[in-house]
Image (cartoon, rainbow, N blue to C red; front, top):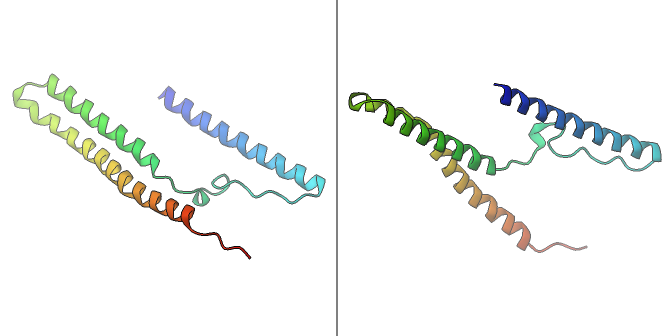
Length: 125
């Protein structure tokens, strides 16, 4: 619980400092009469943040290894009559596999879109 609380606090502190630095940059630009820089994507509104499928890789691996560890742990602890309890770990393994499948399918789509954007000719006027 302490580690989770520390992680939440540090994430909050990082976000607060990022917001303060961006605000300070904007205020300095206003004082000097320069154009105000836009807010970074995702800082003010999470919906503006670009979607990244890599987080599904992390989630998938975490769920998968939790399921494997739980299954092996239950299988080694319970006797032969209670071995079916280790099958509950298949739920976690399934969630992890679903995240990994999504990551690989969507990752290929994003890679194809990025490749098309890089190879597309730039229109010059």
